[in-house]
Amino acid sequence: MTTRPTRSKSNGAWADGDRTPLNHNEEFKQEDDALNVRARIEEVYARDGFGSIAKDDLTGRFRWWGLYTQRKQGLDGTHTGEDDLDDEYFMMRVRSDGGRLSTEQLRVIAGISTEFARDTADISDRQNIQLHWVRIEDVPEIWRRLESVGLSTTEACGDCPRTMLGSPVAGIDKAEIVDGSSALDIIKREYIGSPEFSNLPRKYKTAISGSPVLDIAHEINDISFVGVVHPELGPGFDLWVGGGLSVKPIFAQRLGVWVSLEDVPAVWHGVTSIFRDHGYRRLRNKARLKFLMADWGPEKFREVLERDYLGRALPDGPEAVAPAGSRRDHVGIHEQVDGRVWVGAAPIAGRMTGTKLTRLAELAESVGSERVRFTPHQKVLVLDVEPTRAEALAEDLKELDLEVFPSEWRRNVLACTGLEFCKLALTDTKNRARWTVEELEKRLEIDVPFSIHFNGCPNSCARSQVADVGLKGMLEKKEDGSHEEVFQVHLGGALGEDTALARKTRALKVRGDDLPDYIERLARTYLAQREGDESFRLWVRRAEEDDIR
Image (cartoon, rainbow, N blue to C red; front, side):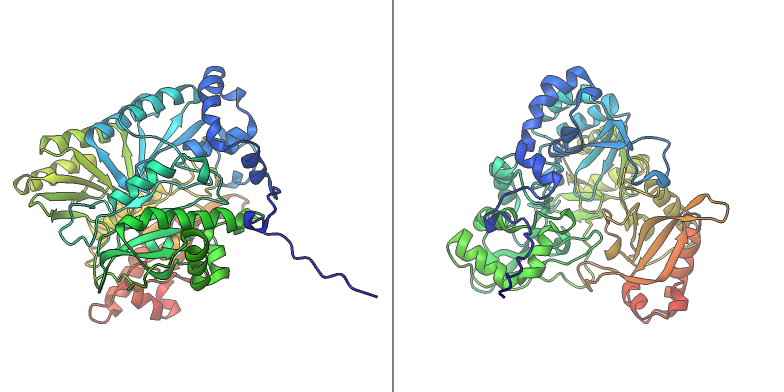
């Protein structure tokens, strides 16, 4: 009797020769390119209203144009995971690759916010602006206004190349190794909105920076090019692939190659093509590039890239390493290469308004600037300021709750959208972050970086696993049957220097209302026990469990 060989279950990779859709997302992407939904929005849905929108467009293809339905108001976290959470309003992401905006563009976004989005405007850690309360009837006019100044929402969400991170001080930083802006522009012009990459297995995050402080969180992006100097070939980029957080955090890995500025678009095209062709499409929770890289390893990934997609070898290259003690957020007043300065300011957790953005444009122009930048750390920079006017601008920015010389609490806080608008969230984040920061500022001055990241669910949009204190929102049932917001605490995570995932302590949860008390106690214990200039993250990795509870 012969035994049939067991056939392994397909992972859905197109390169295996079978493009049969293995889940509903793959079905609707194959039925109609998601980019095509724009015509239906403009010609049908904006005219006939929310009720006319087909389900696969509403919950699927709309994302390719930066649109998600937001959470119905009045539903607390106990309703997360239920049906019918969709409100008849949208969150809209405005794409701003590299966080680059002119004051004219900023004014247009601000006007859209005040006229169509109830004055909402949040800076995300992808260097873009998120608006809320957008009606489908207004979307064509919003697009018209954005596109009149060179902006768009194209592929700001979806299984495609999303907004690309870039150094917010590209081209002006005195210490810059290489300016990657031209490569970012070529990729955007050639491939964003192209059917060639509009059907990837999952979202795809790009980062390009020639800054020596490695300011684009390259460790947690799908593909990153970070500046490095080759001993023979000169300035170029170190290539990292396969990073991502969420419920299965994995750091990117180096391919060990050196990439010239001119070669970045071709290498980006090759890596993105590998993801399209070899990425896992059967299970959504295994479809990110990080899972392919984890299975292949960097040696095989490089071999396939060079042999099958580039048709040539890339030179070996050195690893990019940030200087010890360097900051990535560019907050403060810093001299530019041309003798002028940039002024970097911190809002609390990226929260702004359209009204504030209009005033920001006015203040920038009042000191002769026409360029503003958002950073991957939810910060705001005004470029090209005359040094004699920088201090006055810093003082004026305070009226917008933008601090150029912030406390460490304010400087190092991040927060995702949270329960206010997000259908995945279990807890509030933005308001919790503000309250916690303001309470800590009253209680304790701390003299070293101390990051607190608020996440409303496990997906880590605010990078909870790589913060000094990472907070993951949860709900806990009380004896009377009601629920309260609690946060699971992760400690000692970091990117850059001392890169590591946070320590998750046994059953360490803190009530939302107790966060300032807990963090104050934790910080005071650290300050009392630190050795010399020991950072919080290094201390907490060796601390006794009783000291971090």
